[in-house]
Structure formats: C-alpha cells, structure tokens
Image (cartoon, rainbow, N blue to C red):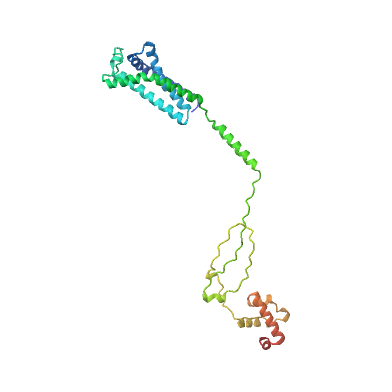
Amino acid sequence: MNRFGKGLLVAALVVVVAMAFRVSWNALRDVASATGADGTAALLYPFVVDGLMALALVATLVLTDEARRFALRVLAAYTLASLVLNYVHGLVPELHGQMADWGRLADWDPANWALVLLATSLPVGSIYFGSDLVAKVLHHRPVDTANAEKATETTVNRSTSDLGESTPAPAVPVVARPALPAPAPVDLVKRVEPVQVRAVAAESTRPRAATGRVPDAARSTRPVRTADELLDEARTATVDWPVGDLTAEGIRKAVHTSAAKARVLRETLRAERTTGPDEAVA
C-alpha cells in the first residue's frame, strides 16, 4: 500500500473512533452523574475511561514482550468496563433523563453495588495504569534491527581478520599394520605362493580400505607344479638356449614361476650343462 492509501486508512480510523467515542461519551456521562459526579466531572468522565483505552492501544503498538502483554490486559479490562456501563445505560431509562436515584444503577442491590464500585474505581485505575503505561513507553528502548545486523556483521568480519591465516590441523600419524593373510581352504594351501610384505610408513590420513578374504573367482586356476615338473618344463623351454642366456628372469618368464624358483632352476640348468644331468641330480 502506498503512502496515500495508508493516510486514507488512518483518517478513516480516526473518524470511526471519534464517532464511537461520541456515542459512548453520552452513556458514560449519565452514569457518572448517577454516581454523584458534578457537571464538570461527568463531562470529563468519558475521557477517563475511553481515553485510557486509546492510550493502552498506543502503548501496545510501541512496547514489546511482557510490557506489551500488560498494555493488552489494560486495554481489555477498560474495554470491558466501558461495555458494561454502556449496557447498563441502555437498560435503565431513568439514566437518560437524569431522573435516577443518586447511586442507583440497578434494582438488585448486589448488582447495584458492583456497578457503582466499577464506575467509581475506573478514574483511580486510570491514574495508576495510565502512569504505568506512560513510564513503560518512556523507558522503552526500541531495537534497531538494521543497526544490530550491521554491528554483528562488523564484529564477525573483525574477528575473522584477527585470526589471520588458519592454522592447519596437525596430521595424525597412522601406524602401518601388516596385512593379515587371507584364510584359504585346506585343499588350496599348497597353491598359495609366499609373498614378501614390507611395512611402509603411511603418509596419508585417508582411512585404509578393509582387507578380507580373496574371492575364489579371483584365485589362479593354474595347477600347482612339483619341483620335478617345473624342472622338466624349464629343460624343455631352454633346450636351445646357450649357457649365457640362462638367467633367472628369462627362466621365470618362460615357465611362469616365481623369482626364487627361477634362480634355483637357473643354477640347476647351468650345472646340468656343465656336468650333465645325472651328475647334477646326484
């Protein structure tokens, strides 16, 4: 809504409140006269009741938290009191012509006593509650949201700049643990060849992958060869090789075995080439 629309809405509200006050003012003046107020007091009495209602409404818009709830309670109490007195004024025709008995607002005595107590206590309550509301409004310190956010942002930026470069977290040393051998079935123990394992100090802080049993599908399907069978294969593969070409690497690639067994085969084959197979075996 633009400024013109807001101004028009406020003007309409003021007109409605002024007319409502004029209607209520007539009833409250007659009630005040019936409770013993003189002409001037009866004329000012409506300002005491309905005027405090307006003051409590303004305080409600200004105050916050508990003070705002207090202003709402005052507004509700004086609105109810004004409603009761206007209702009594409509039920007692004698009040309209100022012909009612002095201090008589109802035919039933208990109701009359309660109404007279209500009408005479409202001015005293206006003094007390009105003073309290004004004091709360004067001592209220509104929080400037924009300034509060700016101050918070400045504090955060200043704290961040004071930190300088962030200090890296100290690296947690990871102790290398030797890998546990995977369990193997009893009938496949002979097929597992020894593997040299060296413990290396880990420099990375990443978690190590969990080790477990090697699946059967990943295991080699080549049958295990005995020492004699391996020697026969080496003799067949290197029968045309000169003695100088009998190296452990060449034999290892030819018969597809380990480096340790290839060295044993190299020595055996060289010995056979020098002394003959029978003497080498003996």
